[in-house]
Amino acid sequence: MPENNKKSSMPTLFIPHGGGPCFFMEWTMGPADTWDKMAAWFLEIHNTLPQKPRGIIVISGHWEEPHFTIYKHSHPPLFYDYYGFPESTYQIQYPAAGSPKLAGQVEHLLVKSGVDVRSEYERGFDHGVFIPLKLMFPDADIPVIQLSLKTGLNPGKHIMVGRALENLRDEGILIIGSGMSYHNMRGLMSGKKQIHDSDIFDDWLTQTVSETNVELRNQKLISWESAPAARSAHPREEHLIPLMAAAGAGGNDIGKRIFTDRVMGSIVSAYQFG
Image 1 (spheres, rainbow, N blue to C red):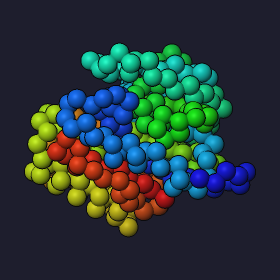
Image 2 (image 1 turned 30 degrees about the vertical axis):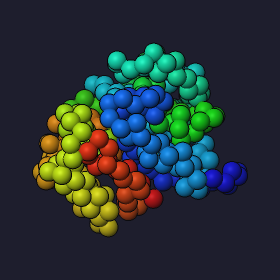
Image 3 (image 1 turned 90 degrees about the vertical axis):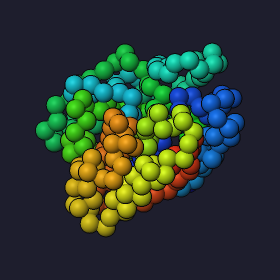
């Protein structure tokens, strides 16, 4: 990844953040190498970017609020919001700084777009933020802020919020939607090949994200519940909705699938816009 002072437009990403702290422990709920391919992909993402990001905005499937909320802490702690994992995983550190300046920019753009915004100072980065970033940018030397989902999980509203932030990409800001393209926990934990839902939904999602007519793409994403195997893939959609924000921030850029793997029997993918 080249480091220079020249501004370059960033892509936007929708990433799968794995299962809890899966990349930083001995995995015992399936083959030991279950998450290795995804971890290796995370380690190389920086090489695909036009330059080192000047800041990162993460929309995680693990934070919902009644209003879109911006986490503004200048030195964010971590929120270990996973349960039943080895004690060592609660000692993981990711000391990235926050950015009140970037948070202020995000707030200004959202308010300008008519979005009712709140601020948060205490919560901490959840594992949808610090687990993947610890692999993607291990030096923790890029300022990070987190933006919540809004309860109700309306896909159109999250596309709109992403669209309001699109121009930040021209300032070298990396916008990441962090969730899972397939998030049926019963299906994942069964370890069985979910050909009847994960494969079918992934095919639909990949075709939709790659749609060259961006208006049609966004309409299809808004109507995602009508997709084949949609509710089987996402009994609840909090891990899919970050994709809507990434697509919105992608503007008129065509999306593409940039990673896919079969994890615990089910297909999981990542997407990029721009």
